[in-house]
Image 1: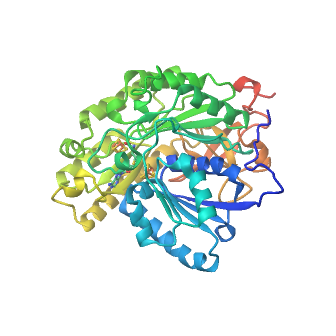
Image 2: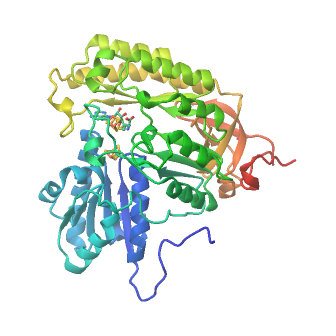
Image 3: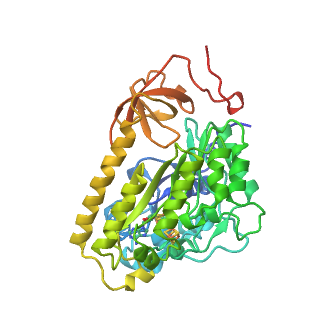
Length: 474
Ligand code: SAH
Ligand code: SF4
Ligand code: F3S
């Protein structure tokens, strides 16, 4: 088959229309935006990178923190004048803020044409068609119907892409007391294994060499649907796909990190030695109030086990700073845990009240200034670890999967190590022809967010093809 499917059927009788999608939030939204492109293609929408010449503008929104929600409204503010100038454009708001706010969005921003929640993605073509035909405002935040699949359309197969996200499950049953996700993404639902595998096979055919399988809690994959396949098993199936070099996953909850999954890091060659394992806090009292379902000691034991099975594993994490009732001693316990684990990198978030979540009603909110101080303290502690971990790689040879040109210069290629460190390679000479290849790269310099390296030995590369195996040229 032709590995590159056209986004749009070429039909000279149909007017070519342009769609621009603004994606905010997590990897799942990135994946969902691609689904939007997939299913709007038959309506003759072609993607454009320019907002100004789009006929359909979709905002795929995130509600995880207040700031993310503000971003939606400030972006919508920018569109008021555009809609006055070009009244024919259709503005749609989807994703997590859409699911959460529904009609209230149109009340606050009357220039919106469509509000479509996270469960309405599959119905998007019908909604767009209705607006095109009848020019009316529509809100669809209804649940997914039993027969409607979790993911829709064929994957967007783009040439020159080495990595892709693939949703395997969606939703969350954990109800951490700070988190809006269970309200905006619903309960856990898993995709059928055969659907996931087919999608990955198609992506690999089009040149993708690394997939990140995603879900709010991937460990819960298959636990409810009775597909007869749990998370470690689906990883095994994925790793059997020829010519796929690497598998990543995100996010997994520490309480559900099974021994089988831990052992997969040793058993499955293609599973990279990196895990994002959000801890949120190092204080048992705070973890309990967060409803995380584990203790500090439990988390540390999981880390020790992972390192035992895979000594070179990179561990990254998320931490919420200033959860209601977090006192100095609790924060000290978090700093202590961070030092004890020595994470490869860390994402820090100041606690933010969200609609409906239990913690919004908790007393003893931490003042913003205190959150700010704690944030800077922890950032400083982690900065040293991140830099030290990166510096330790100087002089080593790392396998880098080339993803494209670096942001800075077209003379540099960029890619990632198995441990997910970004490496810019001081040799962009071969350009895009290298995308999808795994190159041996000597690390020459380390920074806090990236590494600089040199491609060592001409022709000494692991090339895609040849059953995904190593094929070193002489
Ligand atoms: N499903 C993932 C988390 C997704 S949200 C998991 O359970 O690990 C990504 C991160 O946002 C969380 O790990 C948490 O650190 C942060 N976060 C979630 N809700 C938040 C809130 N109300 N305030 C601040 N940070 C929050
Ligand atoms: Fe949110 Fe907790 Fe579910 Fe993660 S596990 S999505 S933090 S409720
Ligand atoms: Fe944000 Fe929704 Fe993802 S709230 S983090 S876009 S699941």
